[in-house]
Length: 175
Image (tube, rainbow, N blue to C red; front, top):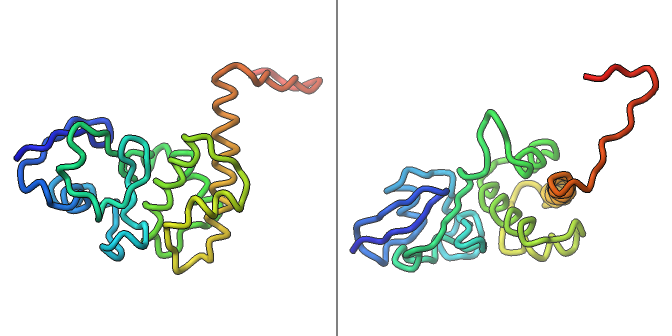
């Protein structure tokens, strides 16, 4: 069977058993090793990817279910030359220690932000509840998501022209 879907904005085709787990196709067949397998039972969230914009544990999804879907992995976020807002926030807050949960945390947080999630700590904690971390105690992760939400909203407002440039201080040179 051939399963056609979009991965990180590229059309892809997988030829093989339709019940092979999506995580295995992404890692083994497509070489996208950013998605991590923690428990293999859908309990830890390390393997979270976005399917049509929604966070999903890729260890639980047979590849046949993503026919004609849009799949996003952590590799879609940014590059070493230009980090995504979330990656910058995680870096600045020291949110990644061992880094194993980080891809799943980033992808779940991305869905939160794109879907208009707030910068309220308790709401973020509840949304990230399916993603487990054994290293950080979560506060650094929550702080990073709060910062990213705020940055995302500022950037979105600037694109809509809602922010005026700050006035120059007297004597400040333009340029």
